[in-house]
Image 1 (cartoon, one colour):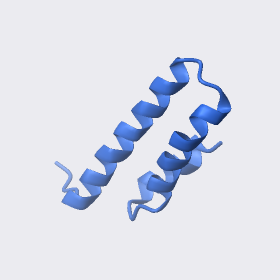
Image 2 (cartoon, helix red, strand yellow):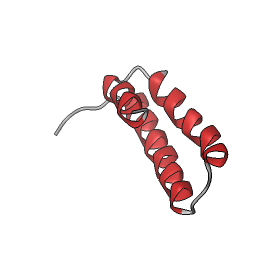
Image 3 (cartoon, helix red, strand yellow):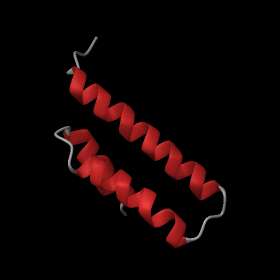
Image 4 (cartoon, rainbow, N blue to C red):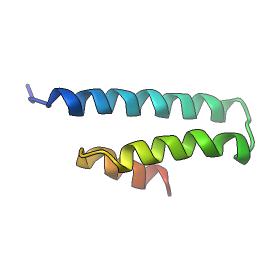
Length: 63
């Protein structure tokens, strides 16, 4: 089992929920303006994280 620091685990859970919300919004057929704010929130949350995998996820999603 991998030991993940609690703070990193909590950050990852929040990022997961933000990403799920972003995908749910995209499934509704929302336009770019409606998706922009949640997308920005997700990307900045991940980019500001001290977890390297979350920063990489932000780069991947931003493509």
